[in-house]
Image: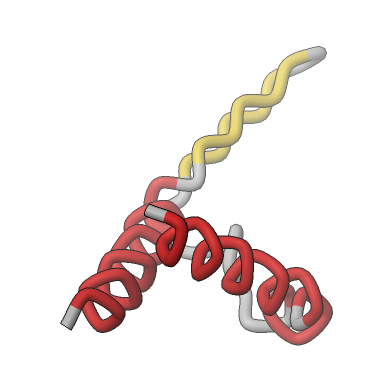
Length: 66
């Protein structure tokens, strides 16, 4: 459990340090993301971004467990 928490912390740290580069990749503005704008109301659900992040995190965890 300790190894997993340290690994998750390091991944979050690396993503935080690389955020300027990651933000230029277009995450959060993918074609599958849902954006509804109405007068006085905005709804945003990053569906495609969530799926991609989930797959990447799953692969990282799977790789560390091997």
